[in-house]
Image (cartoon, rainbow, N blue to C red; front, side, top):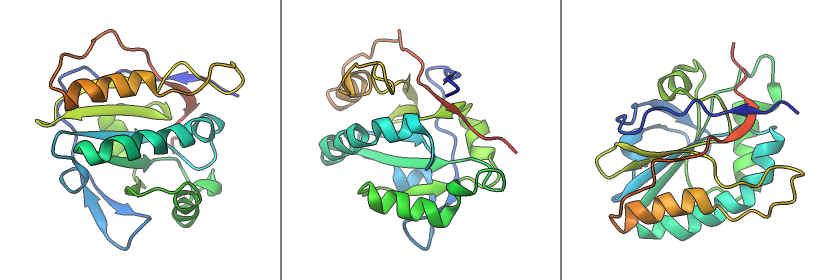
Length: 184
């Protein structure tokens, strides 16, 4: 199982906009459509990655804990579906349903959005404040498939708490580790 780290987009970067097909609906969504009143989490995932499967239960808990506190969530898949047909949009819809997504799961067919975010792996987490400035990027927590560390979401939760409570966020952040994005 390949282990690719996040590229760590510079803190303070303004959220790159997008206009992508929502595989959970029949429309397209922009960053503005997905953002929350207090902040926004953008997650790059895919259907088949074992790192994504490992964290999904905790990701759903984080979403459910914080969306009621004004945090918006959106997941994006940017993988090449010609070489990786298991990541095709119709299977993204199934994956979202099976995992109980109550947030958009967008398909980045051109991979331009992944490039704009400098995304490298799945899962890759980005947290923007209410001014759309990047305040956190990196891992959910220290848990990885097979390392025996229980999922807690501690790194992402700590950053979201900082946004929700208007506190400073530790700039010393660990990259996520996962499968590389499958580039065309």
